[in-house]
Length: 444
Image (cartoon, rainbow, N blue to C red):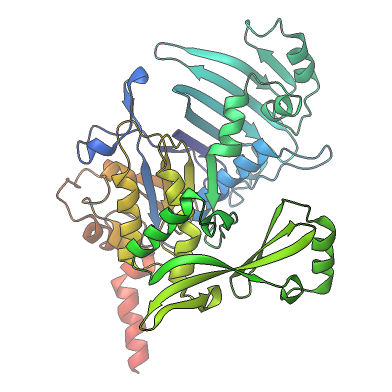
């Protein structure tokens, strides 16, 4: 689970901001807030970020994406580190960017932090936090890496530390060298954290058309429950040569698709999706289709015939199903969750996920949205709602609604937000004089 995330000098975030998933003392919806008894704390299962256009919501998501990529993939020997500092201040543009993650992994809390410029890692630290103390596993300052006393006897680890490039994290290098000491933190970034952009497509969709797969029935029940009009998904077999793709792509598939492997192809122009496999040395192609109930029985639809909302649901449902699995530890971060979705549909998705959360849950959903109708304390707690706001000098601040003293548990948060009392509203919408002036221009 993500416990806390701090960033500084990244895109529109000049000053340090801390995004915390630690629950406040608020009692509302307490039965669905995970408890970590060992640390005597509670960690929220969900959090949403509101804010006007260009306020910094997406920049926050990009910070997570950068960190994930930097940790998991690293950099090439002669490559630069792809940071984007705050450029509206010439001094900040020269300073390193800072990222701090506090993570709950297998009931242990780790703090992993790093400061980087485009050329090198300035500082890197990994700390194991117990209920009573902190243990620094390693601390890197420029080219010097200091290991915990219990690790100094590991000669291979010493060798790896000395061979770590200045533009590469020691954590990443140790994984590439098969050092498993820090594997839990690395695998959190590689496997636990999942980032979905507004236009993300769900890739592994073949299990949802395989009637023998347990997820097939679950997916179809959810599609019906969400009132999409779709009764179930299916795969329509078609001749390989009939695939609507260039001949050179078909030739590549003929060469590269091996027996028993699956290749997924998505046509972004119309959202159609295909699966190509090889069985008995013959290429088999299947097209993903949907079925609706009509007056004369089932009616087949192709993906491009579905509404944008239905296609968005098909892309999002696998994430929600994974979040709701028993013992799931996934952390999904979704930018613009509400894109192409009706408010009631988004709300129903969130309600289904939250109904599966409990004090023993370990999955999390973090998302950004413009949908103010989701600002409802019947759905979300105050500490689960955040707002980004761009200050006059271009700096983005990130504030939880729980910090606003006049918001009680029975307060209409949406009304306060739209009145501009919580930030996040473009100033042009709050400037009555300017609006009246523009309206008068239109009347003359």
